[in-house]
Image (cartoon, rainbow, N blue to C red; front, side):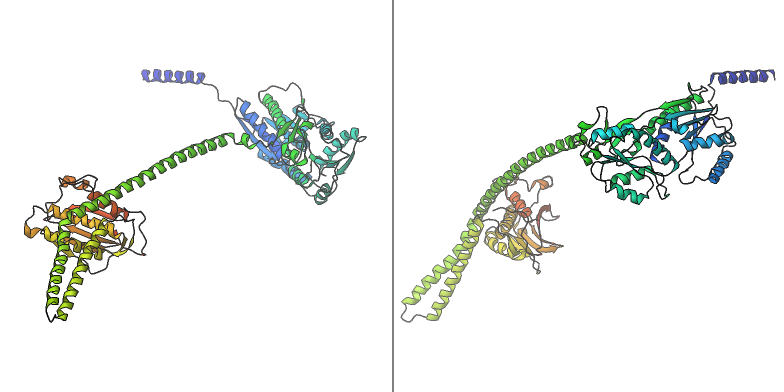
Length: 623
């Protein structure tokens, strides 16, 4: 029991020691921002953004900010203000507010009247008032303010410097209480210029008439825009929207006094900055949150800048040389090179790189095409030589095939002479002999024609042909060689036509090469098995020719090489026959393959596309 008590005491002491070392959590401070208008209005939006950012970035304590927009330009009755007072009092009844900020004079007047009821004992910071607006107001001890200094004369000086021929200033303003107060200040400052130029005021007219007036102003006039929360007909407006409409309609340049109008149509001016006002107001609030009383209850802010819109300068032909030396120019349109320098350099680099690459590719393409043409020419020469080689192998059978009709012709001619020497020649028999001579002559001529066709070097001539007819003609051409080499040529030709588009001579050379190779492959095959089968068929959209021999076949490890150049199994062969055959078949958009048939020899298959519209092959074949 004593041990447990001692442990609890030690643990409690340790916890207290740790707690003593930790920093005390800072209490959250609460600030209310009370705006006389909607916060989304451009000037108030700029002020609000800077005020809030400065508070949060420069405070060592967490700050919770509340915004209240009174919207007095649209709802300004006393009854509304009474209801708003009661609403805010109820809303913040259980919340300790550390500082209340009143933005613009109407909001400050509201807090002067009802601030103690809504935020009892809370310091008040006001901004957006000038000394004239502050007037003789009696400030409570807990009220502090940032006064602004509204000066209209500097903008008039600028306009006269830029437009020395100006004869009149046309001032556009509104009829709300704020508009009227601002216009009164402007008129007071304009009096010193009335000996040099005249002033005309458009403040009591409906907006439609204001726009009509400014659209018809003569050269020598300048428009000065103040504020317009309400026009002469009592219609509410937003000033920055009005300045856009006035600037768009105006026939002469428009100048202003607020930086929020820049970029909305004014040429420029000596412009007051709401951003600077927001920063100064936030710094005063921060001092109060730290418990430090400001060094003075009222601080006057003058942060005007001479700023111009480059686009409006171009619109009205205003030279930059006319501007004061310390002028700031916004919205300047940089040259294309300055705006997109890195993009231009990147695109240029890409273009040059592509141009270089394209040049290299074109050069390589040209070299490749030249190499292809040269290779095709060499292959064509080899194909031609291959036909001569094949013809050489066929010489004996061709000589035999020609000798047969020649021998018959000689025999018939001798018989005809003998008949003619008889006293009574048999004319009918002579007619039969002449017919036999003519038939034998045609047989010999056909043999010679086929040989000349095989040996001639002709250009690639694709035509519509029937693969079956081509195979039959080739078998007939090889029949003498087959008889001489004691080989049977078995044709298994489909009865259906197989229309293809191709060069008859080149395709015939392929078949001749394959059949002659098959005959050579069966040199050691027994007599009854010396059979070469030529089969045609249609498979889908292809015509297929299979040439099967009964030789020993192709070594399995060499099957993939049979169509490669210079591959041969013959001691005296060049190894180009099958390579040429593949080149010719592929030039006809076809395929050629070789396999070993189980129980037989090798089988070569040629597949050529069936002709649909008698179109020529896409690639040229060999001449």
